[in-house]
Image (cartoon, rainbow, N blue to C red; front, side, top):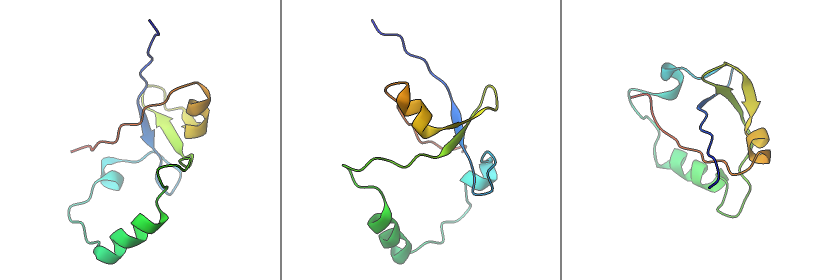
Length: 83
């Protein structure tokens, strides 16, 4: 059987640092239908390659690009919430 390595990463915010719970969560979603339609039109489509982005390894604080994880093999991305 193949071995599985689980490593937890945290996405970076737009300032280049790791996201905090405040960056990630919001009290009230103020977006409307126009925001959703804009997202839907510009989001990667099913057959498109996902964009790379910076992540911080939670155990070490090391920054790595998503594309570097893809080079190692299968990468599973799980999105969750701090709440």
